[in-house]
Length: 113
Image (cartoon, rainbow, N blue to C red; front, side, top):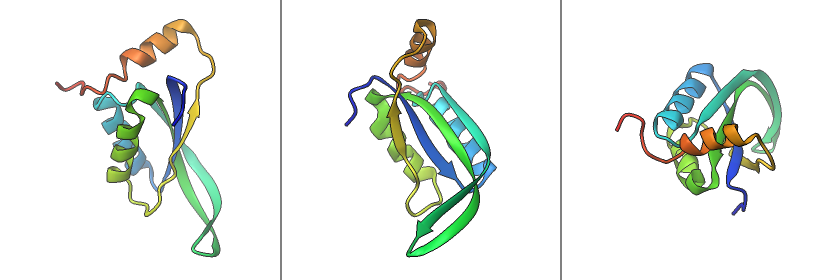
């Protein structure tokens, strides 16, 4: 488990609508302060012993270590891939106002509550 409070999580998805749905759910649930949707990107990877290539979209999720397990569970529940990418990277530094905003947006409490 990571020691950093603030994290960037990378997740690839097979379509823009799926990425938008996951992003919206994470933000609405208070699990991410912001999710950027980038793409399409071209991914080249090995799957079941074969080299594959696909157009995908990349989610860049800004969150906190405190809710990371719930973020991963939510991504898995909403994702269509058998093995979705889920890579968490620590944010080593950031502006204080931005990190305070990130903290406030990742309480794990739905904004609909």
